[in-house]
Length: 443
Image (cartoon, rainbow, N blue to C red; front, side, top):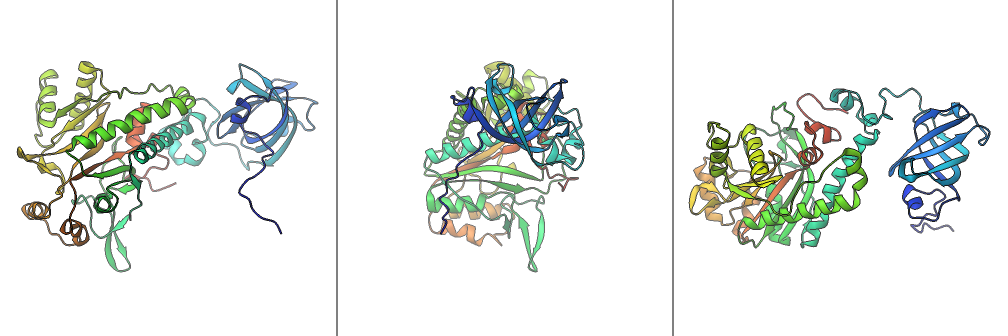
C-alpha cells in the first residue's frame, strides 16, 4: 500500500536553493522555459525563465549529447550541469550543461519578442496576447508587486485582529445605488453583480467586529479612461467599536507602512527590475474637502466648478500641492459632501451637509474611499426616506441595525489603481492581468 505524505523529494533545485549557498561546483538538475538563446559559435548561452527569475546556462558544443540548434525558444526543459559562480550572470551564477531533456516544444514562433527587456509593442497588442506578453520579465514583475500589496493587506489586518470573509458577488440590490449596475437574469429573477461588498461586510461586523475581503467588484460605468475598469479587485475592510472615522485612516496608514516594509524586504528584485522608488508613508497629511478645493484654486489659479465632488484635474492638483508643500505622496481628503456619498455614510454632526468620510489620493489619484457608517436604525431609515429611496431589497441589511450595531466604518482600495500609481504606469490596464472595460471581454 502506498500513501501520500504531503512531502515531495525534489530532484531539481530552484534559484533560491542555489542562492542559499553550498552549490558551487556541484552537479544539479533544474527545469524551466527557454527564454532566449545566444549563439556564440562553439558555445551558446541558453537563458532559462523560472518563477524566481532568469538562469544563465552554458551549452558547449560536445559537452552535451545534442545540438543546441535543436532547442527552440519557449521550449520547456530539464537540464543537468555544474553550478559556477559568475557575477555577470543573472543572480550571480551559471550552469555548465552536461545534459538537456526537452519536456515540450512550441508549435509556432512567439508572436512578440517576450525575451526583450522591454516589450516594444502597444498596450492593445500586449492585452490581445496577454497569456504570452505576461511571460516577459518586466511585465510579470508588475504582478509580483501586486501580489505583495495583497499579501501585506492580509498580513497586516490579520495582525490587527481582522477575520477574512468571502461575500456573494450576485445580489438582489446594489450597495451604492445609481445606474452603474450590471443586471442579469437569475433563474427568472432580476439580480445584479455586486458593486461592493458593503452591505455584507457591515453585516459581518456584527459577527466578528473586524472583517476584510479581497475580491472583484463590478461597475457598469460607460467610461473609457486610463483610470477606470468595469471589473476590478477591491481590498475592503470594515471595523467596529471605532471612536471616529480617524480610526479607519489610521488603520489604512498602518497597512501602507507594512506594505512598503514588506515590498522593500521581500520584493527588492521586482522593484529593481521595474526601477520603482517606494513612496513615503511615515505620516500622511489630511485636509478637508472644501479646504483642499480652496488651496488648489488659490495656488494654481483654478476656478471651483463643482462644489460637491473632485474632478480628476483637481485630484491631480491636490496631489501636486501636498507633494510640493509637504513632500507627501499620499493625502487624505476628508468630509466629502453628503450629496455625493452613499446613504449609509454618517453625516458630520457639526454640519450635516458634509460626511465623516474620506478619499485617499496617491500621486493625485483616488485609490481609496472610506469613512464612518450610520449605525442607528432610525437615522438610517430617515436618510433613506429623505433621499426618496426605497428599502426594498435591503431587508436583510436593515435587520442588523434592528438588533444592535456598534459604531463602525471601513474602506475599499482599488488594487489595480494602487499598483498603477506605485509602479508609475499611466494606464490601469497595464496593472490588470485580464482587463474588463467597455470594449474588452477577453482573453
